[in-house]
Length: 250
Image (spheres, helix red, strand yellow):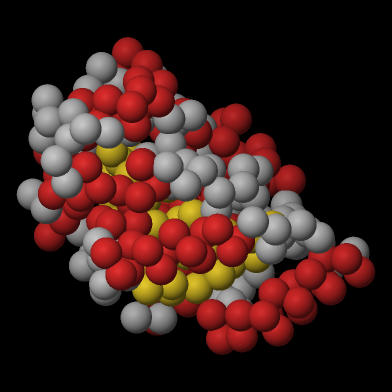
């Protein structure tokens, strides 16, 4: 069983899209997958059309110790989900005085983690307590970088947090890889940025690049994964390749 957190403190880089469709890709090739929505914006949850009426029980209540993971896990077309809601936005403040507050998620997942081959965690676009919980619970990190000029801006803070977690909370945590998203090979800038990222991080960068693709932008509005929405699109092909690369990377 592998627990992988998808992260970037910058929003709009395709992190949630990558979490959903990598999970769907792993499910497609035969693995049992759980997605964990750790973002108070709940974009992963809403993208899969989990209605608010069904979210009276969500990950906020699990982190608060009111419900167990098994109480809130939901099925969705080939994989499972621990949903989030806006209530999660209050969790960082409410949990700040809890003992071992960075390890709450890791402890909560223990009762169900052996049910899955892969647990994928969608982190918030910040480096707060919820992200810290995801890093402490995970075995691996996938950093999602947009193929743009400012892609590396602020990445040093993320790397500093990873080092702190490795030193103090989760010595087994490793950076599994970096995936470049929103790539358009017709744009010189995109090619230059991806080249620079490969020069900087070397073998840590996945071979698969996620191409900019209208179907990926449209799929969440239809509450579908890219495989459900357009299985012949570049997005579907790219995320299936990424899923295979992650499978083989361990």
